[in-house]
Length: 116
Length: 111
Image (tube, rainbow over all chains, first blue to last red; front, side):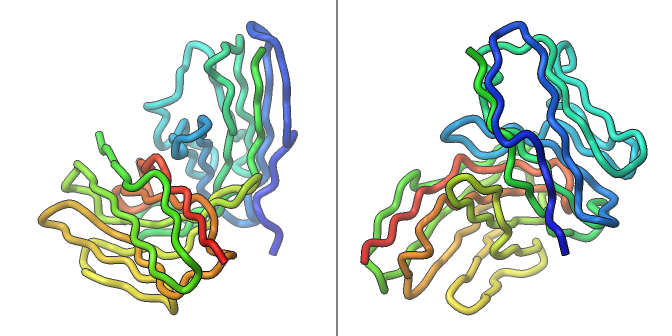
């Protein structure tokens, strides 16, 4: 079974530029998560999708971050405009259900973003 | 919202010794407590989890204990091996939603 795929793996941009990350979850997984992991910290949930609907985006900085999962499969996370403090690893995870009994979240390798 | 604290931030043990990592959480509604292992350049990988209706769970060399009254849970690794070296994260959430992670523990197992 293929794991969670993310691209690009690395991205370097200047502040105020825009950037987008892509995630392809494990086939058949209904729930998709985006996390931000700043160096030396644990992952912080940004947004959770159930199929193509948003379950939780309470920690997403909506003035600059946006995410979509139009067909309930792939997802993109966008930052516009980027700030220096957005430098982090952006992790995508998926689980088969995610709502109700605990389900394992499977993480992708992440996209490492450096904002200069 | 939930707040998870994890200790220690770094832990160094000799191969064959045991390692213990402790976490506390704040939200009494949390009922799911997974532990993840993250190796350099990779995403976190689930190694064990426990639900609030269970006090202890074991899987070979790894065990987790949960004290709901005190709101803390711990990861125990016995007979450590060099390949156990990684960063370990605890997390707490309501089922699998609104998961909050600890800051991580960097475990080094010296051969």
